[in-house]
Image 1: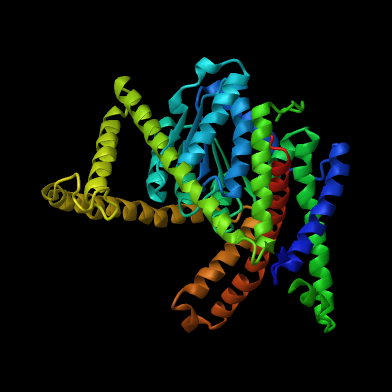
Image 2 (image 1 turned 180 degrees about the vertical axis):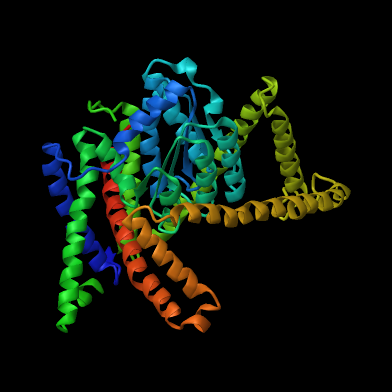
Length: 256
Length: 228
């Protein structure tokens, strides 16, 4: 028979409660198209892409070294969809570089689809979406080479990044007019924050789609985490107060 | 993002059902066991191993893309076409010698490839791997030190209150980390430990909690309806 794994019962309960609260709040907020907050810099993307098109310089996008199993990569691909559509609209040449062969297939499909959607299938060329290498520093060298040779006007480094983050962001800084970074990896975030004009920090990477969209379902991605954060703050406060007064009931429940 | 909601095609609906079923299965396997009936974890591991098959096929397509891009470079005599020739030769030479003489060789028992060819290829493979690839890899990694220096120079400019706080905190951590710090003043290492243990950890945990919540919402939405 089915049974809950001991030690994970509280996690399952917490997941159900958090999901239910997030769902209800997101439903309410998305029905009213209510956006809880602004993500600075996202509104400037369109302007940057238009500028790149005016200068006839490419727009560069890389989703990092993560595989299709990395949530950061999936979030990056959602942003790529937006960037690709806007690039096609403004006639800005787009260049995408990948480290993972599976991600390469998906990014190629996204860019191709953006061109097809605008009826410009013939303008898509295979060298717009490039596979570099799965080896971390071969990928870094490849991306650095593209950045120096092609001199993109706008660079997007969004996704799962490791030690190569600073190398490519610093190289991009030399020629790019604007740089846009984003990752949830706290070790790499400082590097993006110092080299990029705008950085999506942590959960902003996932909520960016909700901010850019007017689709109620997508807005739920912006509202949901905020609702969850309120719950987390309440839980942390309750835990701190209870433990301070010597009550460990919350610890016992969460340890189940 | 378009605001209009379009109906899913049949193919998309089928794929959505597969995504939902597998997503829910993997979520449940983490919380639920079925002892005596079926080893859910083993089923999950087996399904995961299929990813290797897909990944192998994707690798092939990746190599085709790389070849196509660089052959086009050469054909059109673009500015860096000479580098494309080097890349293609390196790519295929490394692939051939790896298949013949590496620890992952296709025919280590010489069933098809003569043993003499394997013996002749081994030093070439070792030269390519240990004398060229490993060194280039280390060199590119080492560049990081210089990039850190230039990024730190830019970050540590006191232009605003935030960057001044960053500058002061950074300097205190650097001083606390330096071997000579304790000789100057023992307080540097205490301050360093405090900065790393409290403000730094608090900030990192905040980022991780927020990201984890966002991943839950992001994943659930894709399980229910992928924004095709």
